[in-house]
Image (cartoon, rainbow, N blue to C red):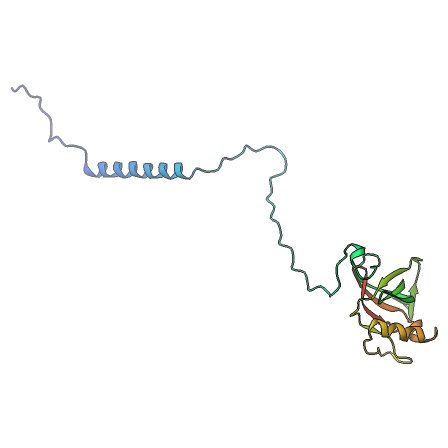
Amino acid sequence: MSDHPQTSGPQRGIPVWVFVVSLLAVAAIAVSSALLLSNPAPAVAPTTEGPAPTSTVEATPPVPAAEPTVAPPAAKADLPYTPGPDETGTNFAYIDLMTVKSGYVYATVDYILIGERPDGGWIITNTNPKLRKFPLAKTCPCRYLKEGTASLSAALSPAAFRAKWSSSGDDEMIRRNPYKVTVKHGVVTKLDNEWLP
C-alpha cells in the first residue's frame, strides 16, 4: 500500500468554457453598471389618487394676414384724426351724416340688420338707437349705386364721395340705400352702397 490516497479516475480541473462564460457575464454586469451610473434613470414620483398628470404643449400662434394700411389705436393726441369706437368688422348701416374735420371725412352711421323674408323681399331691422361716428381712412374706397341700376360706381376718395353724397337728394339711392361698412380699429377702410331690390 502507498501513503497517497487513491482516486477512482483521472482528476480534472474546471472546464475552460465555464471559465470563459463566467468572465463574459462579469464583463456584461460591469458595463451595465457603468452605463447606469453615468445615465441615471429619472426618479419616479409615487402615484396618488386623482387625475393622471398631463403634459401641455404650447401651440404656435398663426401668422396674421397682412394688415390694412390703418394705424392701430394710439394715444388720441398722436393721431391726425379722432378714431371712432375701437371696432373691427363689417356691418350694414345707414349713413346719417358726413362731415369734414382736419382734412378727414367722418361718417355717422346707424347699424342695421338685413334679412330675407320667407315670402320674398328684404326685412331691415334697426332696434339699436346708438349712432357711431368713424373717420374714413384717406385710402378708403367709397362706391355708391348708380341711380336706377344695381351697379356700383368706380371707387371715389372719401372727399369726392362726401361731395357726391351731400349734393344728392334724400330719395336717391346713394342716400336712401344702406351701406356695407368695413371698420378697422375705429377707422372705415371700405364703404359700399348695398343693392336692395
